[in-house]
Image 1 (cartoon, rainbow, N blue to C red):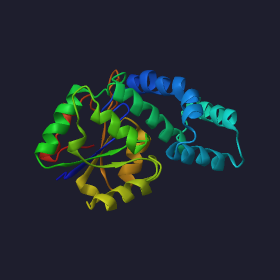
Image 2: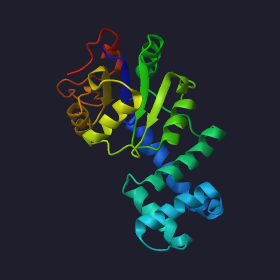
Image 3: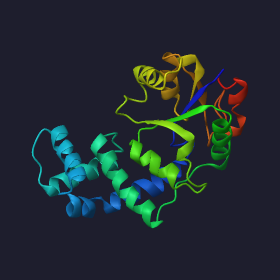
Amino acid sequence: MITAVVTDIEGTTTSLAFVREVLFPYARLRLPAFVRARRAEPAVAAQLAAVQRLQGRALDVDGLVQTLLQWSDADAKVAPLKALQGAIWADGYATGELVGHVYDDAAQNLRAWHAAGVRLFVFSSGAVRAQQLLFRHSRAGDLTPWFRGWFDTTTGGKREAASYGRIAAAIGAAPPSILFLSDTPAELDAARSAGLVTQHVDRDGVPAARGAVASFAAIDVLAGRSAR
């Protein structure tokens, strides 16, 4: 029986287009001014120091901005970039310029699973703060109370089996009782290698990949018949 669900976000609970065509451009456009105006704030300064450590050299503000923009353009999974993007998105959500996209079927079934006592978690390459912002300010309302925990790449790479072992240990569940949902086959392979049950969510496949589902409504978590 499935007692816990760990879900990816991009392409799984949330439209790829929202992440790639709304969130990322929003942060990139505002990143230079954000860094210049707020670089002395302790939280921002800590991330800029991390950029310099990763680059292995001191950078002036122009160098910091250029490095961050290059990482943004490359969609680099780099912790300081993710943290700064999250801070920029926080401003956007607070003003109402951003509203988190969550598929209706995802919201409906996450609600049902939570109500039935299934523990819900998120594992995404986006920083935990960014994950929480998206679900707190979603078009379906604040969904964060449904989730018991949040994991990002500080836990490990999403294509590394060891990351899923760490998540299983952190949530205190046996891997075969955990269902992992993702749109990325390599992530599903890694989770399966760690003993988790997996389900491929293919929102855009025409036809859908073999064994994939196009909606959370097709995932029978409560009956424990959820994966291939």
